[in-house]
Image (cartoon, rainbow, N blue to C red; front, side, top):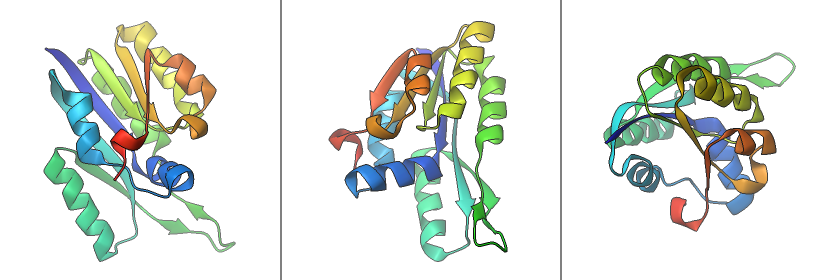
Length: 157
């Protein structure tokens, strides 16, 4: 079986599925699809921690599925804008695991990750898969992936 490492940009997927479908991403259905006939060597869900109980419950669900949950504090700036993304953390972890995996699975629509996929393929020969909402996934990211899996009815709650 091929070894897979999974990296989920929780905020990106939350907002893109909500905007496109007014529904939530089905992490269990995703897990079953992405891990079928594969050995999971790492699975991370990257999220922002606002500290509310609903979020804590959601994070436990992710852990129960098989994800290690990485949290960053939510930062509200004085001008009203917010900060809290995991792009650098996801990239560093993915490059680290690309050395051990046969397949890197990225769940995000963020076009900034196209360089990550290109680097992982070129330097480590790893296959790359991207799961994202088609209309809100950057074309550069789709094109950089060996396989793009659209988030549709089958991956929604």
